[in-house]
Image 1 (tube, rainbow, N blue to C red):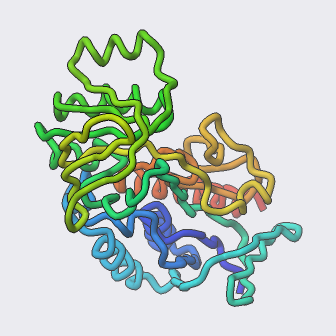
Image 2 (image 1 turned 180 degrees about the horizontal axis):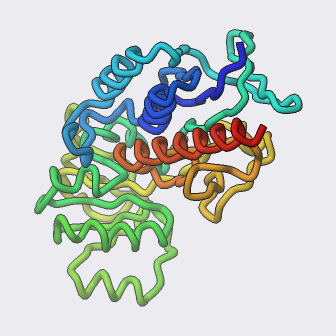
Length: 302
């Protein structure tokens, strides 16, 4: 069978794209390796009617809704390679299975690398997060930390997080790239700065209590944000020749089209910002509309 579209990635972008295409009566296969980036997150926020939902519950509801549409097939597999033969894409899964589709949509998301601090993953998603819009409300007015080794990220995140709490300490984990102007800004607004290397994070059950440094005295913090480095979770887009944008995401137009005919992208794959669920889902909807529009125009052009 040659599907109208193979969607690689079963997060909010991929599922919403499958929903729109299924409702448009397109044959779709959705591949999901069941390894979501936000699996460590206890609650997701900012999605109206789903505010505070757990990522696992969100995925379960989405999959249940997709089962209503007979033309949407869900397959638990990781796609390893995609090649294009004339007008058809061949997809090879980690199991060796092969699939064919007239179009593909990349919704594979991102992989993240946290600052090099021992034990940081024990707190990530519980009291340390990467998105102030997702978790800032729960941390409001608390003593917070920003752990960021990149000075651009550290400075930007400090200004954003200040909206939720004025009790902030920026920790650069031994990196000293902040300039005097940035340091003066922190001083003006009462934002602390510790440039010593972090030797330990102390807390219980993922709830941060204290940060220990190589030379600086310990500081008490109850949570905060980390500066994350992002990269694509797969090279499929680049292998197909898709152009990238200035942020390292797959370059797309307003309706998810890449520079390669028949290849679309949605969600974090194109934004590379660790987008909120609602943003990723909207991106999937727009890309599905773009793909369906192209299928309609192709049909009537025959």
